[in-house]
Image (cartoon, rainbow, N blue to C red; front, side):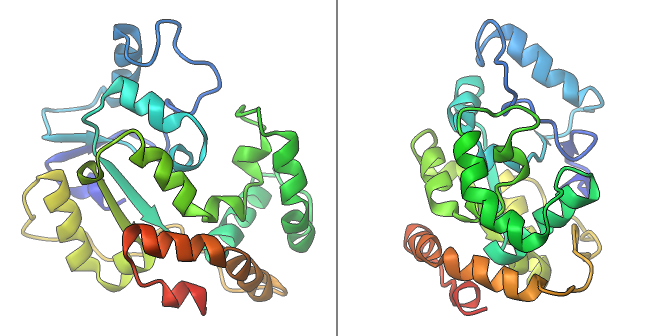
Length: 236
């Protein structure tokens, strides 16, 4: 990951901490000393870097996470990296298949998603479909971002598109460093595409396009919310 290569930034070991999206909250609440000590234990290798952070993608999607983070630290800075919805959905499907958490073929998994999510709407546990089978729903970013805007001022958030980070590598990293208030390093991390899926397989491209089309209203809402031009998503 790019951020952990900066000498002034310490990222929690392993990609995902899953502290604020856990099913059972801390007994004393998210802003308690006990919660702070428990969360800080994920950063035990911290060596006085100016910025300490972690990356858990489900924080954006799952309900109540934004208010939990605010209870813990209302001054938290939040970085959102948004991926084109169809591409994101197929990537998640492949991930779940890889770990044996999805048994349905691609087309049927996408078809079954609304029912799965309705059945698990109140469940955020490890096996919940909210975590495992929310292929299309996670690509409806605008509503998720609005939850965070209800809890945090806009200046504490930075929104980027994943394709920007790849195509405009140096500029995007500079924007991130400025946002986190760390110096621009003499040598930028090597440009590499993380979490890149393997080449297309039968039916995947068409399925991704269907997801993209079904997310069109949410994508238009996101355009308006962030004042972005998302033509490349809408017409991909």
